[in-house]
Length: 346
Image 1 (cartoon, rainbow, N blue to C red):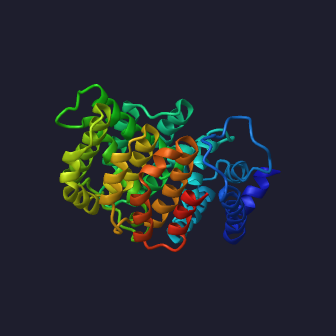
Image 2 (image 1 turned 90 degrees about the horizontal axis):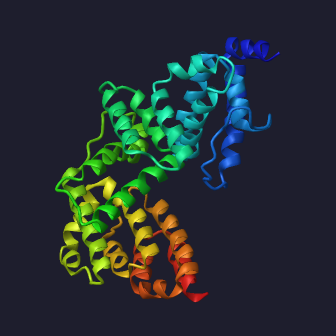
Image 3 (image 1 turned 45 degrees about the vertical axis):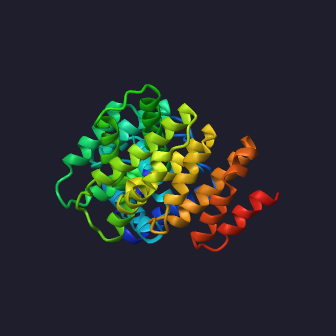
């Protein structure tokens, strides 16, 4: 019976860890090449061979086994920085609510409040302003230098949640420009920034076990958002963003100083691609240097973005050929310049 096996796994640490490690490894392998489809575990669904379901069934109402699973996920992320461990960290917590006695474990998790907010956001495929504020409050409530911040950072790094947060920033800034109602303070975006900085610092937090709360580089972020807003406005007016180009040095400095600005560059480049905004892409690529904390990741994502863009509007891609090729050769990672060059040679 499941309860008898669980008792063995609880009493025999080696046996319990072996069981959980086997299932977590299967989960990681299963998601290694899968796309982030945003599907969440639902009550009464899932096959017995689904490693997520098997992990949650193994844990059941045992907080001892759950703590062992958390240790394995934290260790896996710290050594690989693979976001699949962040995906599992959050999905497992949500799936436990559908297991017998799983609620007992769920309620003890410091991130249970976050999971409640996120599950609703996944269902709606968007994160509400109230949800962002609640997450920001949760972060603020974490005691100073407490390891719980690492768990919060991992949960926020769930690929689907990261995408929702970044999309919200892009959508919000774009709508503010289109409505010509840019306030002096981007209050809603500031709430998002408080969440994003914890997400983007997750690698640093876990690698160095640095649980001090990261601060938003407000001045640099403000320069970045103002520059992007100017570019969006210029596109709407059909003008070249000359003001931004003149102040490209300030934009470049902002990218150097702010992890939020660096990481949000690609979502805004993707927006520019969708809008056919060649000038914005030129400016952003010119400002983008080699100092990014995840340049390799950025490069791969950027190539994927270009591939999608080429299918939609190949003539627009040709318009930024010089800047794209220059950036690809400058980024310094083997294979990236060849991949970008192939886009133009096909």
